[in-house]
Length: 70
Ligand SMILES: [Zn+2]
Figure 1 (cartoon, protein in one colour):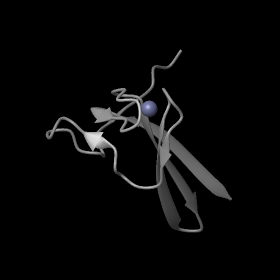
Figure 2: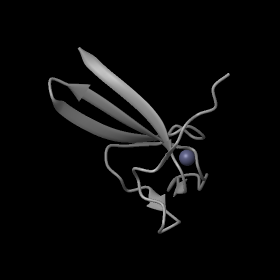
Figure 3: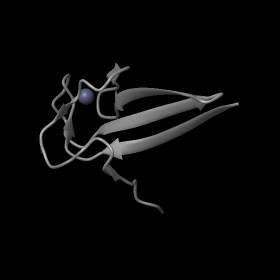
């Protein structure tokens, strides 16, 4: 069973389209192994690592913004 968690990263800038706060961290967990990838919801650009630029040095990649609940 694959568990997928998606969360936005505050302060992250897409290296492709320069959109801020549009980067989603996608964690896929399967049998104790976790794979992280990043997707820009603005342009669809994806990366399998953390090369998105974090503009605010006080914001760590683990500080996440929850999407609004309707
Ligand atoms: Zn983008």
